[in-house]
Length: 228
Length: 221
Image 1 (spheres, chains in turn brown, blue):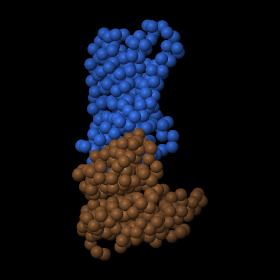
Image 2: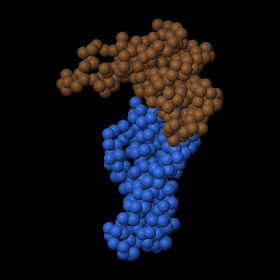
Image 3: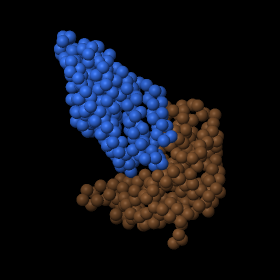
Image 4: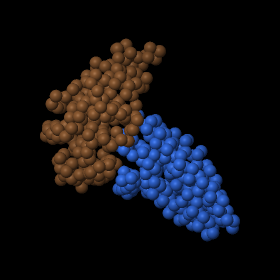
């Protein structure tokens, strides 16, 4: 395998949820400017893999490295260089759009440009509105504005297009292209084609364990909850 | 450090916008304390004798009402995941949340306690020590309660579990807090009790944010 000293890579990853193997023996590598798309049916572990990549959960086996250094060795250095967008929006309804974004930006080092980020997701006109007034699509756009407000070379996006209309998807695609043109790395899970040029795709269904292992602890006869 | 102050500021701002949550704790404190004269009788001497204990027990129970929302909202809406992967030590994040909790719950309780003291016919000599002991005690309660809230995150019926975890741990606060006020009323110096509370506070400042960080990391996983 190619050495990716300057990129983001993982080897031999396995994920176990509630005593079931979700996937095992998974390798990935993305170099700067590259994109990785995670595909697979619901429950195949796309979100779980992204959470492993983000350092929120620890892999049951295997290693994830950022620029050749395992992320568990210096997590804070890695966290400062990474944006993670999960499937929950982390938006506080009591705060205004701008306050929500400023808070998340203040957690991170480096230059911050709140107005440019709001403009980019077309929320500038709603900046002083409480976030509880936003629609689902607008809330999602506010979440995506987070990754534009402070720079980070690695973006981990979990189903970024959920609730977005086609215009917003176009904008997101534009932002992703710009990010990659600047040497940034994208990892995105998605069920719909995002239209990212020359992205590597990992099909998580190919890494699922044998079907026997998925169904059931024989003693209880309970089906696996996390794996459908 | 900017993240630390941003977090304290955000939590205070949310508490001010959702002011009813803070008010609920204070109103509970006042009402629970006001129930005692109905239960034990309005005898002024009896109330004065019981006032320190009533104040501490009701303040503690009122504070318990506030812990379920300390981390739960962030846990539910996905903010906790982002706090866990924020590039600052997680114990600092936990400490910021605890400080914001004290400012929005402990401080109002501290302000309300002399008023309830008057209502319960607390001896005038006791007020100074009451405020000093309450300042230390509510901070300890915030720290220990946050640890309990972090440990019970994600479990079913976490409110009940939280009470079972936290209430036994704050018994020393109750003993020395009420003891300090009793001593002051009796005309003795309350220095010893206050020093013990201060020692407990220092110990909790060391242990609780760190314990919270471990528990939050597990809860986010």
